[in-house]
Image (tube, rainbow, N blue to C red; front, side, top):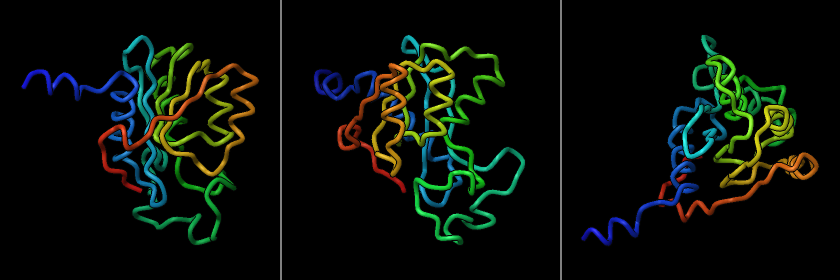
Length: 163
């Protein structure tokens, strides 16, 4: 019985990615539930999920502006009430005085170009994701900035995907 428990124990990447999916459950976005966990030396530094700015009404209350305007996913990022999960994780680090330089970010989805730029300037060294967001422009930037990126199969995490 003990052997079975140990063999099902997630490795570190699976563990932190599962946490990112748990963080995503706090999302107020009607389109995508995205979660991010920033880690260094196997320690969680900060987390973030996509949703409206603190103290403001979100899409679950007001409806999705992007849906109302028929804006395709991966475009026109500025027309949205939500702050992306990666952005919120970076903001939380700044708010609480946490240095994230040299860290790894685990995110349920690949980054948009705006988040990729912020992660580059924040000094993130590695980006691990599960799902591809419909904007792959981050790849060129990450390659130039020497930020490693990779994907985990959601099926390997033993979780159910929401949105």
